[in-house]
Length: 448
Image 1 (cartoon, rainbow, N blue to C red):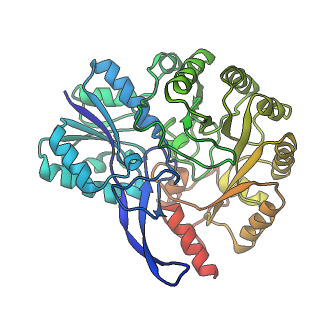
Image 2: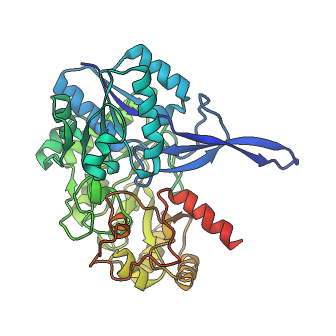
């Protein structure tokens, strides 16, 4: 059996832009899919088949973990190909598939890329009619209807997809429902896929202080919080499309993480580590064990955190163990939006105090903010801009609120009420969009 775990190319055309000397130059709209909680498109100055390091490029966490898991279970025959990381063209990708002739292609997708991804599947099947597809990712929230939306889809695997993909490869058809790894299975799983080609390509420049090459890793799966737009905790590590069900969190053991990180650093010479957990600092014990590991490794590191899920004194402990910066999701600077629309359960005044503590201990701070929420008013958006100005941020991310299958926001737009989000409403200010970057670009254009 030949199986390909594939993150296919995603290009959206050429855009001419004016140069400083009055001429024009072409830039290229490309996208990130697997590895991104909110897949989106953006512009880069380089064409397909011409990779240049430096633009945002997330490691495809679920795909990398499922590839090595299935390779172990099958005893081989599994290939990993991240065409986004290769920046390869469609011609290069299709030629590769025609040469290798895989029996199965496992593809992760979400609503921002799905219309595009269906065209890719169509073209693969036209060239290689016997190839079967196993579709994974948030798009599988569509259920049965997804099976008829493109040819040769044998199965759609919901949630994290190690075990579900194995079921499909062993003959399961249709919708393969959630089947999460237990904590014991997580800690016994092989390390996610890396090799010499891909390891140095992944990059996220924030928080400020990253060193190249950078390892992007997860030290846990899941998040207990229920932000209206957040995708992975609702669709990949839990089944909670309306924010009313239990969400699971599983943290890797210290032994697993020490073995994994030691191998990465020794084998691929990573100069920094970024923990891209949904929420890295869930509880003091988890923070303390990672700090101890990073002290041993002596490699600078950073993490995606919340302001209120670990003790105040641990920011200093993180700094002392080599943490140079953190990302924190504030989302809005208006408490009513946080409480009644986002349902983030975050005290903004406490979050501001934490931000200043992070600054005091000497770490950089990257803040993330979401605009265009359902029910958000122009006045509340101004509150967010004012709140941002009050924080000691070294960098920030402004995103349009993206609507992706499986998250509570998407449930709201299907006409179903959300008790946990009493302020969320589909009024004239709300614009539906699966691509948050394009939505934010439109919001900026309307304001100027």
